[in-house]
Length: 369
Ligand code: R2B
Ligand code: URA
Image (cartoon, rainbow, N blue to C red; front, top):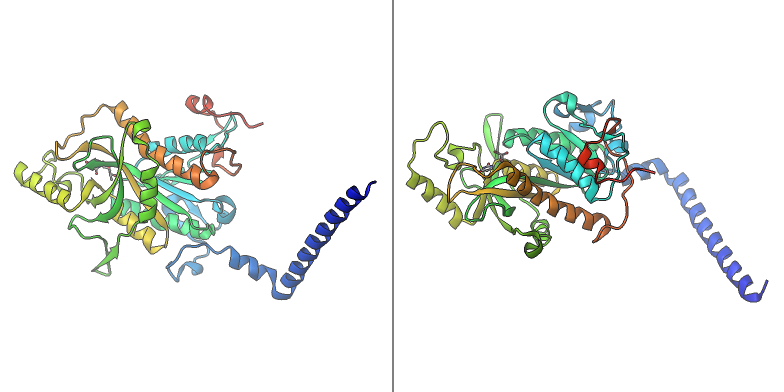
């Protein structure tokens, strides 16, 4: 063996001894200070301001999700969750789960399909695709609020670290071309307050509807209008408690105002910087902000309310538009997970069950080896 080879070997051995010494020091420290306490401290979730009564719930039953902490090991099953995506319907969120699986490079075995983890609860749908949870929230603030209480507890029990919540939906645009993606800067309620009203013990409380401004801007930059064929804008969102009179429509079963009054209201909204109307953003913004969760709302406008009330766009066009916020969120996740562009497969636990894979998924996913 020449001197050069010997020198290299000595160098490698020294590095090994140094690493082992470091490990021994760490183990001694853990034995002295109690490693269990250390590990527990490291693994607390980043969720804040939770009810002081949560630790007393043994088990905690997340009734509407049909999950509980006694029968599900939350840290094991959900501990790797980094993104929680919410959308109105179970069908849309199941399709989104398959879409995001491909987009983040996950593979599904040919005999498996994603399982709705809350199916037996018959309220909301919940799918897990590696680091992404996909849930349906129904219509309106009361519905999304119940889901968020339970999802926030879920990520807390799972000890998730800085999960990002994103609502993907549809909306009525104000002064924007149908098909435009509107990302919410601020959510205001039907009385034009940047607040979510919660009635507790007969008293109305106003909770701030704060969203992450940086995240909204970043999501916007991921849209490439020239290439994508649509634009994304950031603007205020009016969150209504009703689809018809609450959104100043003339086409509900009842209407006691004139077309002129309707337009006057919509123009007023436009002057206030309101770019769209939907039905969940105030509750979504308030609950995520209270929990210290970074969050965003991204909705595709399916009509321009300055031009009408009825939605007459063909269903297949609406389905294509539905994909637009999903495409942007996929780009965002790939950037966060891998940097752009995606290079590797993310290996992790999915909500799989052994059934046939839908054809459209089989066509676009590779078999596990
Ligand atoms: C947008 O669309 C739904 C009503 O059709 C509602 O959930 C919303 O926010
Ligand atoms: N969702 C709404 O809440 N309003 C619309 O006009 C369209 C979708």
